[in-house]
Image 1 (cartoon, helix red, strand yellow):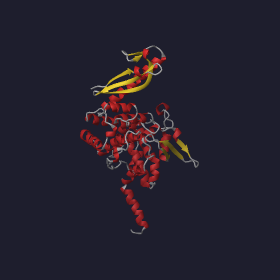
Image 2: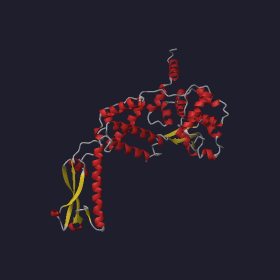
Image 3: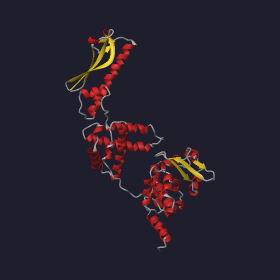
Image 4: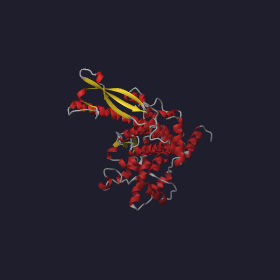
Length: 401
């Protein structure tokens, strides 16, 4: 049975010539009456239109309040229906009176989280972060649809729901374990928000763990970097892409940060040393990067480049997709059998340029703008030759050769 809503003027309870208006609603053959707290003169109440008559501001105010109350009740009803909740008229009454525990759907809270990200683009969040979260939201929506619901009650999300989501992703999209981990990471943060907003008492992920498989990071050796750096390239577009890649290898900057790099990001310290000071697009972490001669030479090369092509930037950067397409050609041209991308350049800075040459991992982590040292440690794990070299040094110190 659908919800029926109406109002009734209680003439028997008049006070000072005014009568109280009661909200009356019926659902599943059960009725509830609830005082609206509004009093009107009996001669102004129209039983047919169920409204206060007249053109006065008083009548307009009363009718607006009645419409708002009815809309709130209807919205509450529709939300509970979409969540697949079992409820009755008493539940509706308690929600209206604010006596019921907050109810919300997973997608509803997810949308609020998306709105927060969107409102903070450039202030701690990047556009691609919003894009990734929207993909996760879509996958979650499809999973909830598979349970024959439009949304899922936040307080009903338990181990079974999370495990079902994981199985749904792997069965329907054949996603890699780490891809599934990312979807769960986004949902876990939405659940943290739900805890903060008091929709739930604790995050259900406390009982459900998703493992992240460690993967090796692709990078090029110093020999390969020098090969790319010294290669004579006559094609202008390929030369520009090569320079951007090499610049990234010597600075550790991501594509997004090189794209926005401008003169305001260059600073001199008291000793005359040049630095790149920039906040990462991904997480807004402040990075302080020494400007090596190799990188500085590339900036000087483009100092006289047409301004209409630079548009305030220090390097003429193509879109990321085109950059990576050209980098495939560059690798082939230089005889390097690796799938190099702009992110490979960042990995190269972390491994071949810094860690392999004895730069402390804590320093590398700060330069890269990592939020956690654990992220930087992933790079350290791939340096078998560095481990061997370090052990050789130790062996000499201990005279164990």
